[in-house]
Image (cartoon, rainbow, N blue to C red; front, side, top):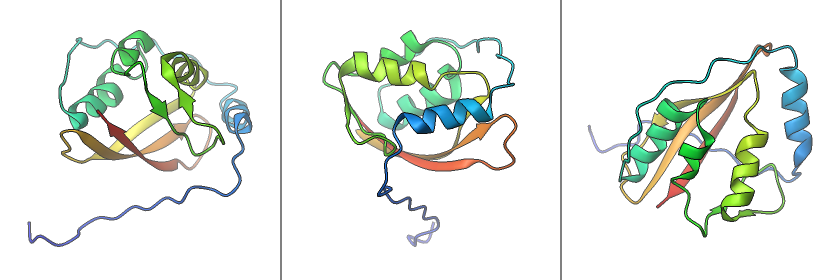
Length: 142
């Protein structure tokens, strides 16, 4: 740890926001994917931002949307760069998560920071039948 920058990933917000066309494209690419059995996990209640993100993506993903929703505040504002409008409130966020929970898509985390009140983490979307992944970065704030 020399105190010097060792890793950078920048992802610009796109000028054109395809909205639900993104969902339709991803579903078309994975149309032949078989559903996986739900992932088993041990319920936890992490208290720091990076622990929450790790728990949601490493343990809960692919199992219980209800468990994921337990960590979203009633006043959640969720910004996905594929959409013009932000999602507001748990109902809109739940629908978004449900829409993107289909066979053949996996959000694979890569790097997590060590944030306490907020965290950034990088990930890639793995699609069954696609040779490449889609890379991204997320910011979560408690």
